[in-house]
Length: 264
Image 1 (tube, rainbow, N blue to C red):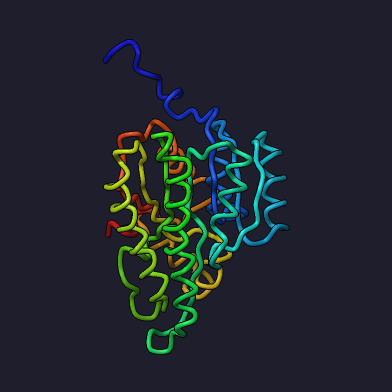
Image 2 (image 1 turned 135 degrees about the vertical axis):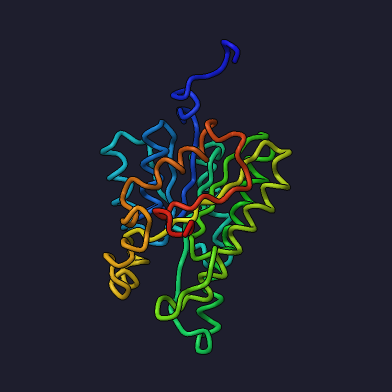
């Protein structure tokens, strides 16, 4: 080891870095915004509802985080470029992109509406492609630096057991996110860009509220080796690792944060 090697504190430091986080107004997105902001990053959040964003920004500012927000519906065509235009106007450049916005739909496969399939696919994978492409071309590739973090799910690692979820579009979209991550990492490594994915298990959120009630939070916790579901801190570490220089030699990887569910 040379004397010029940085300390671990320095490797995790994000002072001077900028981040765009979609689906950032609550839940997992807001948790990751806290993590990056607490390490010094300047944050721009995006989600559909301005009122939710205003609450999130106010919350982050109480923690001393430099944050602002841009409302955008990434499931709709034409939304990506204006979002990136405004984010670049505010940040100057984008060091970190967290693709967290997502949707789900519960229905038996034989009855799943094609309109719902398209809605899930458009937001969960198409928008990730379009936003990564736009940010990559306009900010990360020219600067030869970038960190892209895609939020997948353990639902993208397997199907659903009988009597549990009926979410074929969601599972399929999250599996696509995982291989999108590998493929983009392979292409963009030459530009100094890392691309990784996080596959959360069950966390309390607006999206999972119904399924947690249906399957039972205690039952789901008992199925995990750690005997618990995720909480308000459990994504902070992995988000910070993938966003910072501590993870600069990690790319194309998917890390499950699920209490061990996917391991057994």
